[in-house]
Image (cartoon, rainbow, N blue to C red; front, top):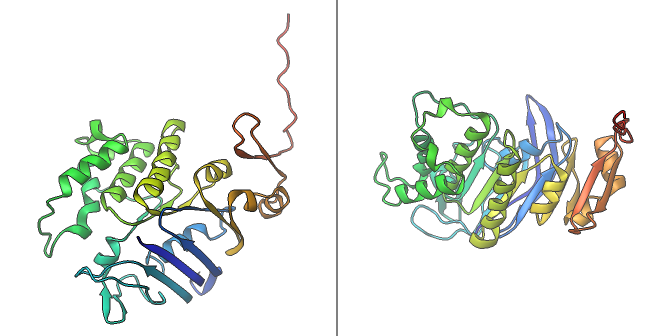
Amino acid sequence: MVDLHAHDVTVGYHGEDVVHAASLELTAGTVTALVGPNGSGKSTLLRSIARLQPVRSGAVHLRGATDAHGASRASGPARTGTADETDVVDGLALTPKAFARQVALLTQGRPVPGGLRVRDLVTFGRHPHRGRFGGQDPDGPVVVAHALGVTGLTSLAERPADELSGGQLQRVWLASCLAQQTSVLLLDEPTTYLDLRYQVELLDLVRDLADVHGTAVGVVLHDLDQAAAVADRLVLLRGGVVVADGTPEDVLDAERLSDVYGIRIDVDHDPTTGALRTRAVGRHHSRTTPAPAR
């Protein structure tokens, strides 16, 4: 089992810090959702622990990983360099390719190379498992087929990727992450562009990955109800600072949410299912539809 922990991480762009001493623990078999207003640092924090954004201070540890020769690593060092560096701890090296066998990230707005089929893009996820110089990957075809199946893309496998809708492309990139077969999965707003059916199916899949396969999942979500339904823990950010970290019941406090989002947010439980639910109250919240004229 692999865990990914960030401790007091500070991250900035162009000399300005946008994440301030934030800590995040992604543990095996657990779904952790990052929530908060736009610009609160959710995506930046996720990118930093995925080695795509260097941290200015603090530490990121990957525990339970193995090096290229299968040796176990208890922990990793602070990540304060570039994404191309090799981590070395206790004499064991974890190269970028070895790291990619442990951690996958679904980012927002990936460009789509022209002339490639859906299957080709999903197969990109197998790159960390190939030998030197793009060697053989005997498990690749079966893994890719499974990733296409669980994301509902089997019938589109031979379609040119640049002919797909935004929602279909989102599922293609998710399938590529699944084909990577990592112990840690990071998802940055994965429900973007998806209709209701695929939003529900994606979140069900996320829950299955944690419960059945022991995957450590970190996911950025804007929908608080979806976050409460899928996650074991919520991390609420505002202005790059973690203001609450705990169970959905603990974090989704009406007074706290109203303060963080700057709008009245009511919190209660669905009387039928008992599920936690939130409701942002706007100026027209009491508007009713006029009865039809007789």
